[in-house]
Image (cartoon, rainbow, N blue to C red):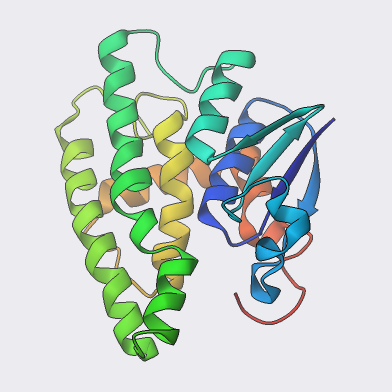
Length: 218
């Protein structure tokens, strides 16, 4: 069985749990506590020299970076698909995911926020303002993209979850944690609601993970 090294509140870990669940794949949950900097220890860095979660181990294969892992899952376990069959539609879904994966999440992840707090001396109000600035900018673009798609169903694309939803739901979770007002983004909220009705998403939620109640806040 695969082993997933992850942290319950990590957005990249969250998206990988969703993808694994949608594919119907079982895995051993291995908690890596970012609060105690376990990810910076020698044991975890032997798996991922970057010291970042998640990492997925399948036999002798060690995979890092959630975009690469999810693409590997899509190729190794193609059913059910996370990408549409049409090449143009695949590009659209990948673009929706990239708005989050490339332009929102990387500048709001834990190590960036810790730099703001510890090195630049920002207080929590400033940190939350930083997060809101980039989430709102990215969500504004994403909302416009969703609104312009006349073929869109309940999800980000069509009537079934895709790679775009895999990326969206953890970012909505983070937005709520950072106290971002989501009312200007009705299409994003509609897709998030549709996903919340699926067991694969519910089981992947941060609060449902075995390490969620351990220790202080992340």
